[in-house]
Length: 197
Image (tube, rainbow, N blue to C red; front, side):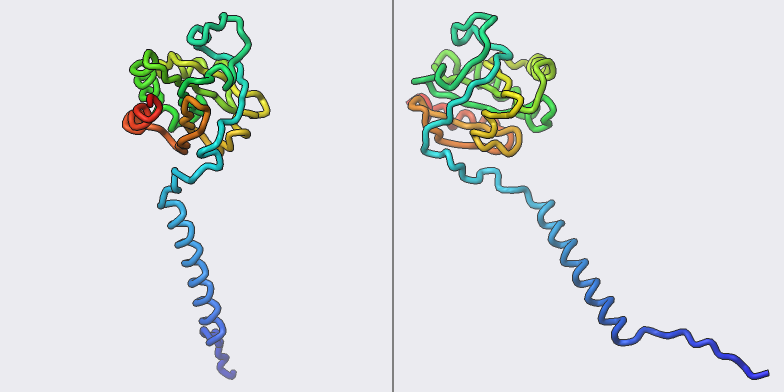
């Protein structure tokens, strides 16, 4: 009986090139995602609103009616309520982890500057009144809070792409700064002097 040989094909040049191309492409994709995920996005992307009048808004009250002399049954507040007064307008949500980081800093700032004329107002977006009020209670927020409409009109008009985002508005109603991401006590303090001029 003749001996049978089984021949197992070995790698040929085409196979080696295909594997090499695949590895280079895979390494490029992995590198692209690693770079994108490991480097935080620039949080201070210029806003189209800088140097321009703040957009009018109207939101439903969550708390703080007494600061504007509104009765507890008042429906909401608007940008017009702050005419002639410097405003720090913060978009936030109860489900937002970064909003927890800044909550106590905003409250401390409010307590320090409310008698000097700087207004702090927060607008909860994509939230429920119950969850937003519970968040305010948990983190000790006492400043003015409102809830955006179901269609998110205020957030859309301000170009909010995520929470938290904060707009610093001077007494003339001009947006002088936009902060994407959590604010700190230090950042808030730097704007206080500017707003009180």
